[in-house]
Length: 215
Image (cartoon, rainbow, N blue to C red; front, side):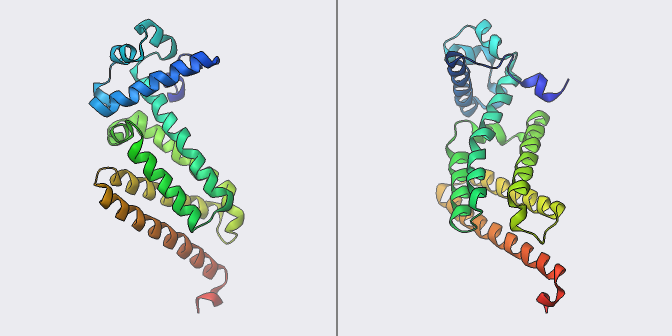
């Protein structure tokens, strides 16, 4: 059975009341993940904290994995607007800084984010979901930015996007585990690294297209 079918909510909420109920379930799950980690979460405790019966919880989510999966998807949904806003102008100065700052703040402040994603390599389902989100972001970057990099092939631009986003994500997740002062230094270095890499990659592509530029 496909991952999406196995772990999506048993039914998608349509009415506002149901949407609020699902959001509340995910909120208490995030707090539980922060307190006890993913392995310590139980559906019975989620239901108790959400103030609903276990049977009611199962109306929306068939099992614990479905709740965790939906919580992870919510993380991605909440982060994507920052990328889309950056891609509107593709400003490598203030725009890039603002996007990285927004991601860093989200990673550090979102309840349960650190605990959920710190063990991603040990969870094949979350690892697959993370890769799906990465591929979606890469496709979005390629579709929005290809006209800005006419000297890069679609494959080259996709590789640039994947290396940049994956590297940035790794640094930002690492920054969650250190002090705020250390994290600020790491984020500043990340901004410099991303800008230098993108600019150098463009210069290299231009030189390949026109060898006289490299002389």
